[in-house]
Image (cartoon, rainbow over all chains, first blue to last red):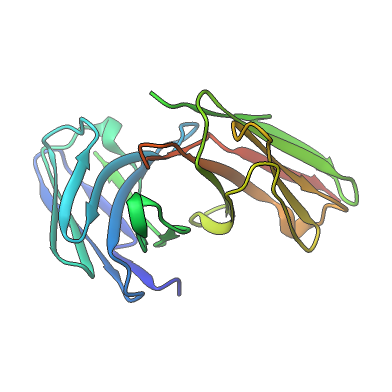
Length: 116
Length: 110
């Protein structure tokens, strides 16, 4: 158990479905992240929330919609996804210090998403 | 934008041998982090380097941050089967964004 819990662990969804990924951190961190990990690609940052405010959206398609209701919970809402969106979606948290510096990220176990 | 390159992409090592993986940034970094991801697992934070020329050791792992703060290396001595996995470096630039390299995937021959 890493202190960052992601559910579900596996998800298969059709292109017309709507689903949500959930992430919860028990570490008291003040920043949370969504990353996408595809085969043979670097980890891609999707969204950053620091102090519950979204600070970055790296041109992610609008079919991905994040939600951060408080500093411990993060959601990724999915709708009308494409097969190329199949990947491992990782949530991470960190404690941001002064001037945006942070310490190591703690990752959850990820959600393996398959879009059919 | 900032890019972090890692080489080699794959490292096949005989058990007991040493190897090094390298990380290079196109821009000066404020700090660099290293992570390990076991097969089927998730990235786990190993260490952070902040100072120019800094060297840190964790048992058989030696991490180094270059003098110019644009490159880093991870050296593993006497490789064991437990070292199998993908090692990622992640560099933080002055805009405080963390950019991950593509990783070095390590396999070990017993």
